[in-house]
Image (cartoon, rainbow, N blue to C red; front, top):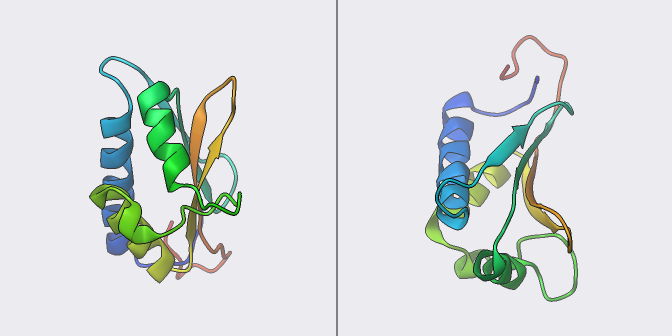
Length: 117
């Protein structure tokens, strides 16, 4: 993946994002990270009912996949979102009614050799 952004800041943001996911995933459950699409990181996990309800509450009331008001997010997600947005990216959640929940990070991409790799 070749993206624009400060590597140290994005590392910090992703560390917080994963810390937030780990808190939502029950012990011994699995989650997967997909980076196959350039500029997109998808963190996918099965959200049990309580976790799914918290994630639904984070989604904007207008039905968009934007994570809504950052003051309502748990601290790890708030920190991750701030750092990702500061670097030109976005954070969203996609919930499949009969499948996994996916947190999607979109980062600006480039083919430049000065980008984060």
